[in-house]
Length: 276
Ligand code: SAM
Image 1: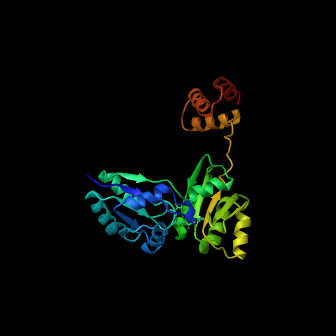
Image 2: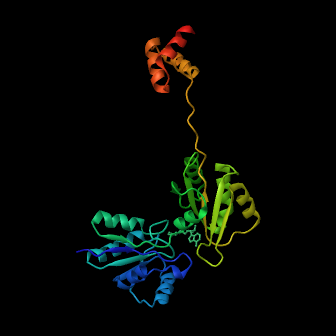
Image 3: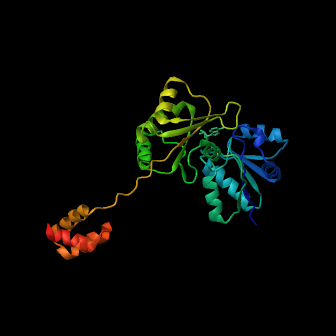
């Protein structure tokens, strides 16, 4: 029988966020697959755990993944960790989980620290509906296409960003959504210098052009204002009737179709069309 792949989140800054279950799972797994063993060893030392480790990072997903899958299929259990936060969320793991799912290998996710959820909760932006956008691409064309796809997005949008790219990203977001769009910048969450700034994209872009950003950031951008659909008028109906007649449709059928499509009274539209 296959072993289980456990997804074990690790603190995003504060060691106090290690839960009993996270520690127990690391303790009980047959081996730990880590993004960077030097980082994970520090955590394991803190917990007093000694465990064989395998490496699984974004550049060895194929060979590293294959080796982990083989061991899981041989009945060993594996705890997957990354440097910080929840595996598979803008971190290695997504592919391994998909492969386990395809092979019928059980996967168990332990809930725990995750930068995006922590940022959303503290942001003060609407949380009912949101979209996680991860990191914007470095490649200009892909970046533009990504931002273009978010034009008109009404849900709260979350982005991850590294400090050295923050100023440029804020400028691109400001260009895409307008300088007045509210944003919450969540910096160094759970750490000593945690900071939550609620401002606008224009102000934040200007500020970080002048001040070098330090630490890790999640950007929580307010969605676009909801656009109420304009109710169609009889004038709109007449225009549509004329267009349909131009396509060779009879007046009666054109009125019927236009009234149905625009939610207008068929009789009123017909009387007006005959009058004109
Ligand atoms: N899987 C991780 C998670 O669930 O939190 C995210 C890993 S991703 C490679 C790293 C990004 O997460 C950083 O560039 C930053 O945007 C965000 N991040 C991680 N820790 C953070 C923290 N303490 N404060 C703010 N953002 C953080």
